Length: 464
Image 1 (spheres, helix red, strand yellow):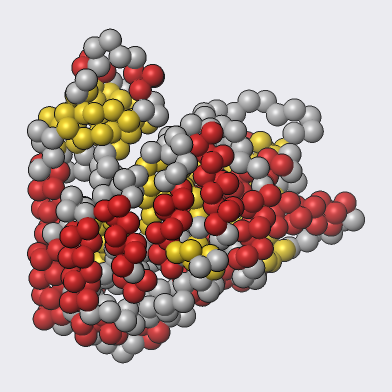
Image 2 (cartoon, rainbow, N blue to C red):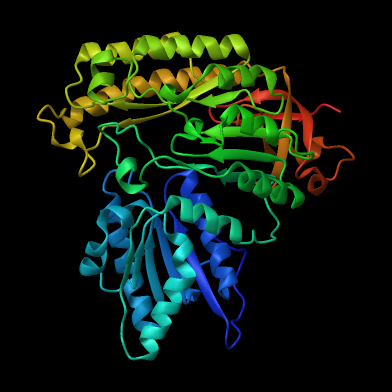
């Protein structure tokens, strides 16, 4: 969970309105919250760092994790006293929980004024006008917008000016929305809709604008980002065109589906020098039986052969993945197949979870649910192996000189932090910078000799 926050609040002007957006979940939600903030800025709203100081509060929700809706209702309960103090406050629920729950949110939490899904946030200014008009008439309008006009959303994104701010040198750009795969455990097809690709020219224009503001690394986002296609150009071609932008030094993309990988995108990892040697490629399970039950439409061997092709194109490629343990019907033999796949692939990083039923998905109704204690035990075994692989990968970087994109001082305040090509956080102590000013490092890619490796990060010294 993350929050859109500013460094502090100042006293509001008499006609000024303020907004606070709390963001849950994935990187696409983070991107959507940034664009909401920009749409609201055009409507006269200034972002603030807390709900207590806001005229409008938006919860941008995620439905992937267990009990997501309950967490939203709990948060709305905490907001209720604020609205009692400020009768004019507008409270909105956005994102995937909003899409899944719809009008039920307003029925259960009357404090909410508007509910809108991830494909309709571009309607925010019009929705606010509708609420203001209704209140002026003495009404208390309750708005629900849960359509799937993804193309309309992309058109609106292009019209919303990116807010000039002191940006991180890394930025996200959404290029694709929705999913047509219908994995039996996943709510995304129901909350984000079918796969829709954003226009190539719009993506390139946004990337150029970000680079003009100091961004040097862009990550392309999509539920199935490698399904992106526009006017006959596929993701490899888009990456090639983005790579031609002067000042854009690094490219990444996430999240990918194995079924949408093609030979050209594999080759791009060897040919496109700005494409980083790090790939997030979810597999979910190493058992063909479980993969079939999940409707993944690939086998474990298909996945392993795909990994081999990527590593042939880019020998230094680091891989991450997603795993679900305890899927309905998973046997000990199925779980052993997952452990065997992890051993064979050898990951630099991975995300692993116990299966939890998502209402409305086919797997949620399966009669072969796994006992929670069994799921927990299997997850612990898997995470022990994955953590050992991550530590080994990090340890292998010791003694190497890696190009690090510096971003900001670390939380400890005595180090400058950045990211390696493999997305590892890298910390360089201020006292090792010599004559280099720490603030001047921000946004620069500089060589760092890795002197220390830790479970989740690296440390080193400038190699200049």
